[in-house]
Length: 221
Image (cartoon, rainbow, N blue to C red; front, side):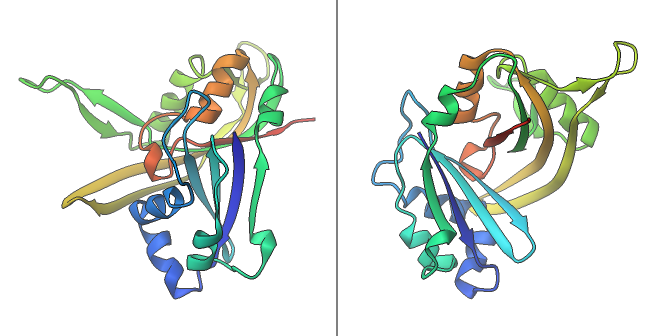
């Protein structure tokens, strides 16, 4: 597994389509791999973080990417520090139960509701902050972690916030796709290392091809 970061330049005209459409950025990320298909170790996940005049695209992948084209298209291609790839396996191999990490996750919190006469339920995006927080809390056990809480049993405070929320809409194969996206930040504790590593390398939730599902972590000391 590999963890990469490439910086895009929002001031460049060529970067605008990538910043405006998850569908376009998804295609550009996938083009960094001769073979972007999932493996038992993981799949290609990506997330775009906007900060000041930078757009950082983080990528987790089972194979090493070649980010040259993405940097040339929308970044600073002459600056080598704007595209970095590091082995991810060393970090994943050190994860143990009880370890505490600061985390950042951009996800597509959804629910499925049964429709009369339909074989499958219709998927709806969660709208409120409370719904989105509950969505993540409902998935923490199966993803091998729990949100860190402080205080006693009668007055616990979870270390988790929804730091960003947006709705994106784009065209895909003559259909309109609309996604409600939330970014979560906080502190978690690992409860099951195997499940947690799987979540980090395979993603959490839906819309993984459109910049959702990638959780990044940093040790809390």
